[in-house]
Length: 171
Image 1 (tube, one colour):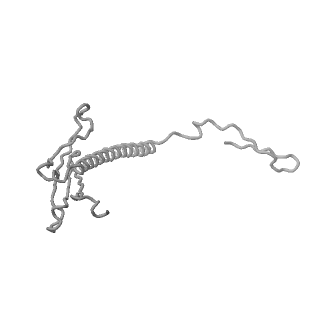
Image 2 (spheres, one colour):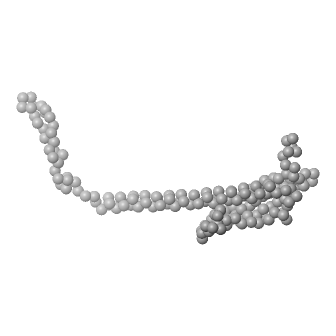
Image 3 (cartoon, helix red, strand yellow):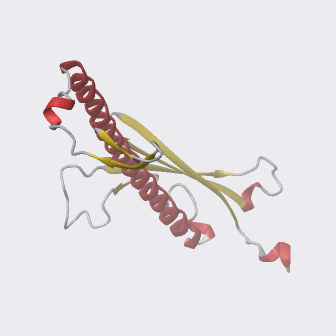
């Protein structure tokens, strides 16, 4: 901008400042250089790649969380079924030792090629080696395994079941 000063005739001091219209923009500044454009494009490229990587890892974390949640649901369901079984039937011959469960709850109707199955094993053993109480307490362990991508994942749930339950100890 070009400044124009008005001076007072009597005192010689500056009384007001006014501005003139700026010169044409093309005369005052020039365009960006090639190096500036390349640096800007490099920064933009890094930002886009980072954004894409963030979305990719976010979706992967959500997928693994869904798989873990479903595995926990399967383990909890199997464990609750075993808690409802009579004590005399709580043995390895009566309870199936292996099972499979689908990832999708309604896999029979909405099966997709990306769905997979969880495979599990049930182990029922005596919980302690003490002969006086070993026939009254069972250790139930359920192992679950599935393949997510190229990674084999596992979950496990363990509980004890007593023949007489808690009532003999509390009441």
